[in-house]
Length: 112
Image (cartoon, rainbow, N blue to C red; front, side):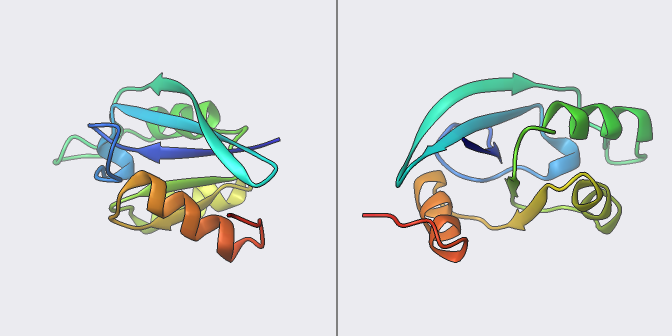
């Protein structure tokens, strides 16, 4: 079972900065397709003026069971912390369905 997280405010498009996201949509990859699983809520780690390291760590821990996270923007510090936990950040601005399909092809997961 593979899970991915998507930073989205509307459930349609990858449109949130990792540190400013208030929610992540979790999708589960099952064989050669994917399905929505749940929404996980968090407090933003970035407020525009400063970064709350403790909150960023909590968000990353909340996503620990995901292999990848799709975001519209992400800073280098957050990227490094995600990678250290085995979560690959993908910076992409696209419809969620298209972003996940593209990732599945890159990862060698067949998609019909």
